[in-house]
Each structure stands twice: as C-alpha cells, then as structure tokens.
Amino acid sequence: METPSLGGQQRILSFAIRDKNALYQAFMPFVDNGGLFIPTTKRYQLGDEIFLLLQLMDEPDRIPVAAKVVWVTPPGAEGNRVVGVGVQFNAQDKGMARAKIEQYLVGMLNSERPTHTM
Image (tube, rainbow, N blue to C red; front, side, top):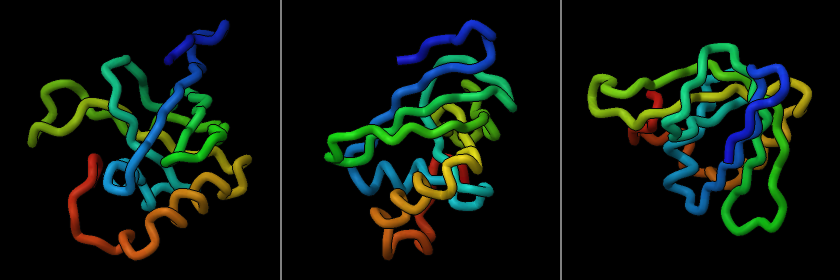
C-alpha cells in the first residue's frame, strides 16, 4: 500500500517479509544505518522520503521506520534484476530496525549469496 503525502515527495510504504531468505536478499547492510530493497513498480527518485511500515516474519507488530530512497533498479536493468528501490533507514530509528533484521540473519550476513542489490 502506497499513499502520497500532501507534499508529494513523502510516501507511506507497507512491506512484509515472511522468510529469512527474502530478508537476506532485501537487506542492505552496506548502507549507513541499514536499509532494505523493496520490490515495487512504483516510480521513486533518489532522495524521496519514505515512511516504511515493516513487518518481519510472524511478528504481530509492524516496525515504523523513516527512510529515504538511495537505490533504484529500473525496469530492464542489466542481469534481469528485480525492479524496485533501496531505502536507507533514518538515524532517528537509532538502529532498531537494523538490529532487529540482523537478529534474524545471524550466521547469514557474511554469505556470498547474491542479493537484490549486490
């Protein structure tokens, strides 16, 4: 679900990740404060502000995270990459979203398996 705000540049984006492999493919640990790749056909520009409502695995509550777009994979990208955007978590989060994701990915973070971004 995506809803433009009154300013037009900030959007609310709900994103659910149900398994560890999908989380591994989406996680962007190389980004300051952490981030996620979100498959979407909606158009975003670098720097767009996103308010992310993130649901991880079977947790009942969504994690609210302010973020900004730092990566765009457009349609027709080389290597048949998944179309979408990478968002960087805002420092206001104090690393909570990143820490929660890393708890789920213990033992997988140093893997050589490809992800949606690198």
